[in-house]
Image 1 (tube, each protein chain N blue to C red):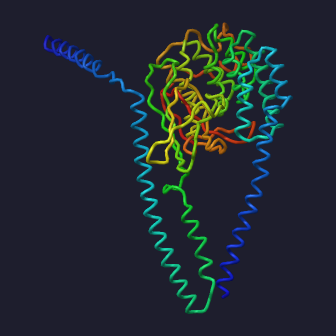
Image 2 (image 1 turned 90 degrees about the horizontal axis):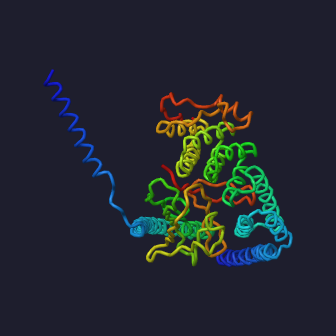
Image 3 (image 1 turned 90 degrees about the vertical axis):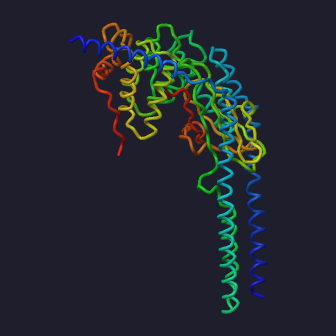
Length: 242
Length: 211
């Protein structure tokens, strides 16, 4: 008899727990649906995007940020903050790259800034581009800095690749390799130098990093010259972190 | 001296011959990327079926074990006059039935096809595969779709719980995730996580264009 009572009590408890859980979920779904509607009609976000567009900032990355926030079920204020932060980064990128920068370059510049690079680094990469697109070099800069390569070294290596007339695909491969090595546990700085040597073995620089004609700003140039890796060094793979 | 020169000359000729043969053999025949994608999905589906068979077998064994255990406990409860045995067995059985894939990892995988471009910045084919047997709709969302869930809808492989999509992506670093039934965000657990400072929900990193 007690056994039956126990089973019945368990069933009642399960049913109760289920209903409580279902009730607990309802406000969450309602809140998310509400935040979606908020964001869609959020006048603050719409105004922010409109003002940015009027200044020449591309709207698509901002709309993509709104979509990303909605997919991640972020609350409307958080989406507004993320969009405002992206507008700030895109503005800084445009200030560093000039008014002629393409939307892709602005996005790459904003990504580099988000990864921890500063405007000086973005300007240095732009100055070394000699009119070529800087989307790939800035993407690689973001990867290197986010992986832990010191910014001054990251700029020096990327500028050097650009001077060796590396193709965008080669620069992308360089950034991907360093990020992949660092994610696999290699010290990022060593991985970057190793990959740079790998590339350098096949090409010769047109000018040396850190020379008097370098378009890099003084502070970066000095650091780049000090940290410029030599092509004489042997191709030893970097040691893994213990 | 003359013999040595002849020998050197022969070796030089041999090198040239080997080099010309190697040059002919080096380029691989072109493979249809759609066919490659189909083969990869079929292989993944077959692996999935093996995994499910193993899981089913282990479930049967576990259920049998649970049954024997329950019988033993019921018998001992009956004999000893205790009545706690049945309540202990039920949750164990529920946990066993709800166990995930046999390898202990949530079911998602991604496959990147080999590049078929010669180092240029052209789009490169990438195939993503995701396991979600109970899903009604799965799409890939990422920076490459502008986070639009309608741009890369995955198709279900008949006979398995796998969903796949083939994409052409520009080289670089991409962040993506799977969106299940238009609402559930699932990052690919087999890829490196991409931290998200803005919203705190990490995605996965996809590196396209590695040497």
